[in-house]
Image 1: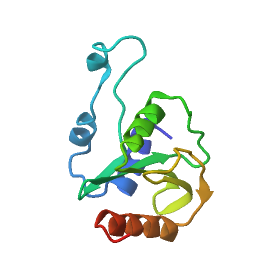
Image 2 (image 1 turned 180 degrees about the vertical axis):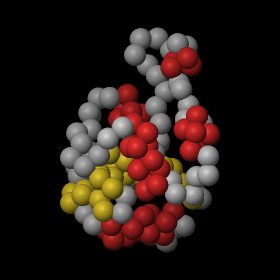
Image 3 (image 1 turned 120 degrees about the horizontal axis):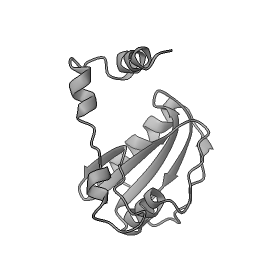
Length: 139
């Protein structure tokens, strides 16, 4: 499949509401020029999803089904440091958002351990709903 056809397929599936695909793609940041400010291999990372509620934060890091998360990567160290602040819940979501294969949930105050367990879409929704109740002071 050509790159153009692949982009159309991905765009149609994940971004059907986007009217200007080229503009959308050009909005993705190229951090390489800014990374020159940092020594060695240090560079900017991204968070796939983040929600704040009453000073509590939920971070979702999306990974491909079966992906291995490197325990000492810069991104993992960043998430671990945020988690250590005591107000960050970190969720690793493996697979498609609507048909996930596994997730790892790391709650504030717990040991930062990426230990994925099989899950369904409904399981993910339940975790997010439970986090919302917790963030509102209900748990």
